[in-house]
Amino acid sequence: MHIPQESRLTVSTQRKRSGRPRRPVHTLKSVVSNLHLLTGVPSFARWPLSLHFRAGEAHAAWEGWVERSQRPCRPGLTVVKDFEATAPAAGIQALPVDYGPMRDYVAKAQDVVAFEREGKCVHCRKKLSSGRGLHAMCPGGGCTAMGHLDCWSRHALSGDGGGDDIVIPDLCACPSCGGEFRWADMMKELSLRIRGGAEVAKLLKSRRRAGAEEA
Image (tube, rainbow, N blue to C red):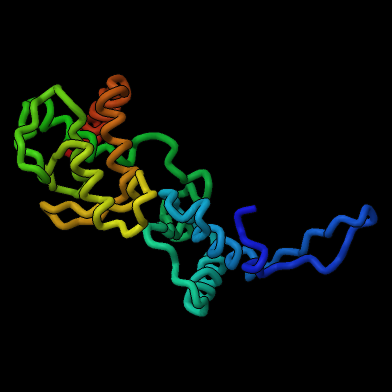
């Protein structure tokens, strides 16, 4: 049970013939209120979640509920308005299922690593030995700050405020550019760089092709 009983907003008042509680009929208000609760309970509060709305009415209901609620929207939750997309595809069909959105991020990391320009750790200032160790790069556009993975982790957790029992950061701020990003985004690029050679080559090839078409 992810939502504590005392926090539930929709409670069944009817029962089936078997005696079990009948599920209450959901309304738009009950759906967005439950989403607001679910994204903030301990089970999901630190997940790198994105909430996609495919209709303006649903998004307006969400914003209205968050504004009236005594509980603020959890930090790090990304709200995406799919219904404003200009492309023909919308909704679930428009959700990225590949690494396409990371193309530029992957390219800048590859450019630095390929020419061994990692430099010094943005946190401890020790030299990063190319090809040795786990060196993560800031996802911020134009920022090439890199650092040891454990240094990034300590830095992120120090400003997290989640307590000593938290071992995986949620959000992180780059000390070089000052930008804030999701820890999961940085881990995607690092994992892809280390284990996804074929996928990286495909991404860079499509990036070059797109650049040639624009030229």
